[in-house]
Image (tube, rainbow over all chains, first blue to last red; front, side, top):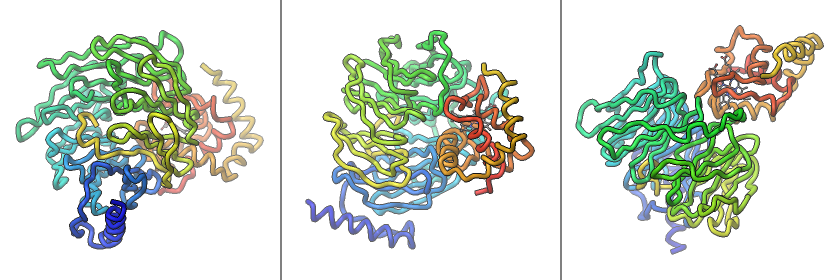
Length: 397
Length: 106
């Protein structure tokens, strides 16, 4: 077992060097699965690490991915390829087995994230500049469709792009306050359904793992909007309206993220905006159940797979701490101090461990998700997003 | 709402004393890092824009450092640009404003 993985690793290391020259024509990879692989974005240097979560180590470093601030990633259905979306509008298709760049395109000036369709054939990316969504063939990265986010104010920045069952993508328009569903069931141009007036400045969104709810967080007002995608004619519904209770919002030095928004049992767990609180909402009624006062402006509230705990990190200047909440009663059960600038947390597929990127210490720390004990540390340059291949099989990730 | 006259008063006193520009010249790796990393989370790591607008020198050219420093300290109410006054001093904001206006293209 050990010997085999050593050989694999050695092969990958060599493959990384060789393929630097011959790029897409790498040797066929040595036999291994990808279910325990993932990537760590090194945001300042335009590089990423391919990591093995079983052995808790780096297999290779890949460079030349452009501006990776705010980069995110989705995975092909076979778990072999990562599609990395960069700030500079780049989409890089990374082969995790050969540790090579299979394909790279620059598709817009400024983008914010992407999604992959349920059948794995379409990769979509949301753009700020020029605002809209573009859709590509996941095999070739050839453009299939371009949907400009046109509204009466011009072209809107697009955020919260998510996949939904049935070859659909759902996204929201920051400037316009609209949510659009682009349905690619038929070949040819998509059917686009537009929902106006979903609220002021939607800043990110999530689709629940069952593919039922699209939830958009609002920056311009206290509240969120949900669309029930199971309905043939979904109606946007506002919830948690006025959760700030009229109090002056605290400054938000980093936008919370919603893809990490957690479903823990019957509850949706959401970072409040402008309040140092995590909000717990009943997943059927969308009524508030409780709130937890936390250490700072929450950025990610991520449930451990299965939902037993929720891990929360924070915006500047409170970003050196991670708090762990108990899903039964919302209490804080642990407070960790990984170090300056904790940017992201990613659980192993069944949630036994969690990887935490600590940007200013240049490390990724690995914790036991049950005992909160630190198990290992991996060096990384300015690490930000961590993405494991198990996302390939989850709606909305 | 902070008192703007007070802030302008300070800026002009500091500018008259040459404090703003002196601060701008002294290298400040910590502030530079803050701009790239923490302003960068909205304006892009290379400051070419994101949720917030492009902050590269070419685009800001012609703007007054005092105006930018005030935006940094007070934010832009009603938008996602937060007030940095709780975290940054006047001279730090001045340094950042001058830094933004004089940054070489990447």
